[in-house]
Image (spheres, rainbow, N blue to C red):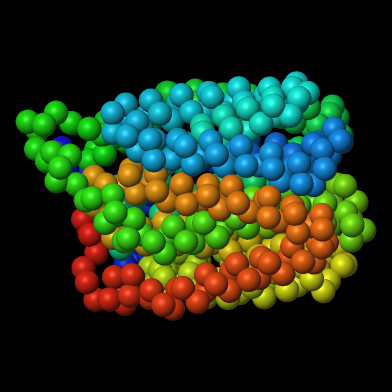
Length: 428
């Protein structure tokens, strides 16, 4: 096993004090830059489709609980492929996994409007989740392995920003596509964009750079698999990262499906319900970088606790406001806080796990995310259908309050608090 290539750290003190665009321009690692473009393309593809899913299914006479249960298949695809994706990356390399997964996702999303049966929708949602998680684990593994140790949250924030930018642009483009053509055309456009992204990865991502320190090597090269951390050790080290992504997966999957329906009941138009998720993504887009810098400076787990607390207050806003502008503001604040937990939690994972084990850690991390997506929508849908949208929002409050409490209980999981040195990774 080769050591991961030393990522050149351009972040000198003057650069750290410079603006965001200057720092962004200073990221020269070609593998990292290729991953950012890849996730931007995928995020835009997601945005083209995801803002229409619940409305599209409702028009085909699926009830709220049926829509929630259908999301189970998406999460099941993630759960079943999350941990094996780490094995595939070590054996096949990140480039091969990325290209194949992007092509698979493109096919799944483009076919979505052409099926009519529940089984057909369920099968495509399963494939959507399975291919998506392979893209996520591959991308996150490359970034965490190559990012400088003391700047991991900042580098992961760019990953989150690229994804959020796609979620902002995608729904806006979707409104144009729907107005000019149809909802079905927006799904097809999402598939075409994912295919273009796969072509970009094929042409631009250097396989050797992407695989340094990650892919499996012959035994006589060096470190053997037995020298890696035990899976249970990895799981314990990243338990708060997994709880963070579980909570976010639970919340995000439920919110995407049912917030548009809740907002329709509050009097918003269909176009306004489509645009609302863009404000959530915009909050993450504009604040994720600031959150990352604060996490790198003051502790990742501490920052996750602060973000969770602010997110609880934003959910309260949905309970008491009906004006369109205030609803969009609440969505923006929720995105700025709760969505920003994700890159910070990934950065924490990168500081406690050696590069050679990042693919397996990434599999566990995304499995936790999928587990949240698996159980969240059915519970939220049942609450919505039986007790109403306000009860659904209250249970989100409980979810994030529990998360905040655990960030206090396990505050020493952050090396900055415990005083133990961070694990192997590129040094600044």
